Length: 291
Image 1 (cartoon, rainbow, N blue to C red):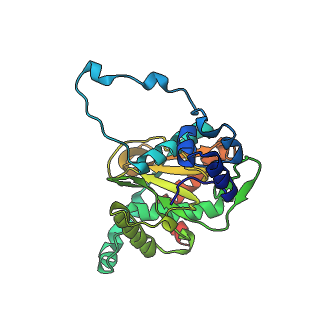
Image 2: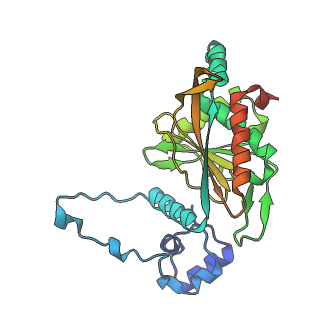
Image 3: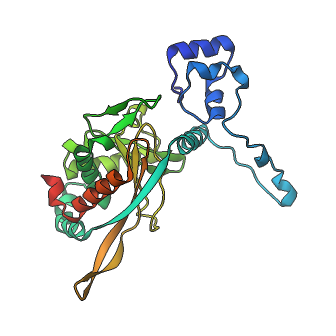
């Protein structure tokens, strides 16, 4: 099945002109092809001049070559297009994970008996679903022409999964209507099937917003790239112990770094700060996300 988004009439025109629509999309660095993109025919120019990349690296020493998979080529083109077209800003914050870690310990035996592991990511998904209901402008998409904001009355959360064959983003549907145990079970199932390439196309689209979680690897922060047509993406790195002063008394607190990248055409800095502050507040007091 084609990964390029194009109307039937555009595909028919491409066939008439003898244009490889997949190759044209790759050349333009986009996933969506419109009728005007075909006016230049098969000779349409790439989005940028990369001729200076054409270097004979073997002149400087031994090399090997590894072809990019089709999956990797499409992902690279989409990321390049997103980074080039979206005025992206990243807001950074952190959240106190004391209450969540205590709750996970208290529930460990009970959840294990049910075959579910309540990871920190489970709580992040639950909190993000609540935050998207509280801030509906984040649960939206911008039309291709940039003239219409499409507000969604559903909350689907994408979970970025690092696999041997590339990054995959399966989606938890209606996350705001599900409890922690169900979310935890779905995360585990989707991640496992993604690793084995058993995720269907219907399980990977339509997210309200995605989470890129690097907490199991490390780092203190990063700048995730917004995945259109979503308007924002949440990055999470490893929880670390931070000294917090309670008056004159130092107190060690487990804090998780949070990185929110957003499309500045729709979301301004103050909104992003409020959104991430609200999200961090839910993590600090998880009872609020259960109500």
